[in-house]
Structures are given as structure tokens and as C-alpha cells.
Amino acid sequence: GQNIDQPTEMTATEGAIVQINCTYQTSGFNGLFWYQQHAGEAPTFLSYNVLDGLEEKGRFSSFLSRSKGYSYLLLKELQMKDSASYLCAVSRDDKIIFGKGTRLHILP
Amino acid sequence: GAGVSQSPSNKVTEKGKDVELRCDPISGHTALYWYRQRLGQGLEFLIYFQGNSAPDKSGLPSDRFSAERTGESVSTLTIQRTQQEDSAVYLCASSGYRPTGETIYFGEGSWLTVV
Image 1 (cartoon, rainbow over the protein chains, first blue to last red):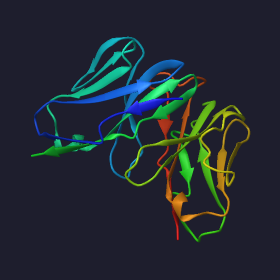
Image 2 (cartoon, one colour; image 1 turned 90 degrees about the vertical axis):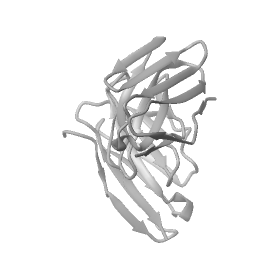
Image 3 (tube, chains in turn brown, green; image 1 turned 120 degrees about the vertical axis):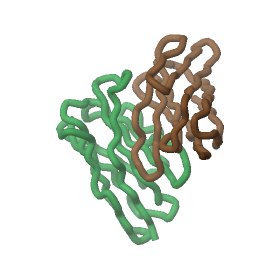
């Protein structure tokens, strides 16, 4: 089977930094996705990590440790528009399994 | 088409009726996924197609749910004898042969309400 865990909700302040963690247990691991989903909208792609390490894309960075079954999404210089759910998803063989998502609230 | 297209975008149906949801993937994408998302919840995997075959149907919640795909293109998800717990948004996604990197794209979803 597979198990993906991430916090249900987080709150951070505009301009700050927030780290959203994701742990997983699965067989046949290929890579790990992060998606952003605003309320009432479809998820949109943020990142995909296959190898261990940190990948940076502007204000967003994603880290993966395959041996620890751990990933995080780091958001810098938070903006109000970053208020959304962040979904961790594991690519397992040809199936992609999503975690329940972390709702991020940004305070002014 | 330019993106994944789903229809209807919204559907209200009476308990016990059948509904059919349609997904038109990005042209040339061979992999197609259906997910269900209840209000405030995460994405629940339903079924995955590679071409017209479905190697993984493990996520279908009951025998009231079925899906098919024809011509390696359009897919339909059918829910028979709908129940109130079926109320959710049904998201379709497509990708190239293997979902790698940025190649998976979601449609806007079909919002189903069973009353």
C-alpha cells in the first residue's frame, strides 16, 4: 500500500517563509510532485523531484530525501495569493497518489 | 485541444439517477486519470488508463462506478444509482506515456451534487 502524510493546515505571515513537510511510505517510488490548488480550482503543477536534494524555482523550492521518505516545499517571501492548498503526490509506477493537502493561510 | 476538457462542469442530480462525466484529454496524451475530491478533502485516486486499457481500477469505490476510454482519447466516468456521498468534484488529468515532471495536466473538474 501507500501512505502520504502532510499537515492539515498551516498559517504564516505575508513576507515570511514557510516549510510544508510531506512524508510517504510506498513501493515502486518514481518521484514526488507538489501541486498548488486554490479553492474551487484544479491543481496546478509546482515541482517534481526524482533525485535527492533541493530544487529551487523562484520563490518556491522543493526538497526530497528518498532514503527517509521525506519531502518539503519551501515558500519564501509569502504573498497573499499563496493562500491555497498544497498537495504532495507520489508517482508510483504509472499511478500518482495524492496526499490530503495542506491548507496554507497567509495573514497580512 | 489546448488543455484537458471536462463536461459537464456542474451537475445536480437526484439520488438514484445515473450520471455520466466526460473527459477529453490533451491531444496525444496516452495516460488518463480520474480522481475524486470531496469538499475540503484531498484527491482520491479512482482509475488510470494507459491507452484504452485500465491497468489500475483499484480506486473505484464500488461497483456503481465504471469508466471507459475509446480511441485513446475521450473517457467517460459513469456513476449508477447515485448516492449523496457521491457528491464531489471529479477531476480528470492526462499525461504522456509516463507521468514524469511537468507532463500531467488537470481539467477544471465536474462538480457533482446529489440531492
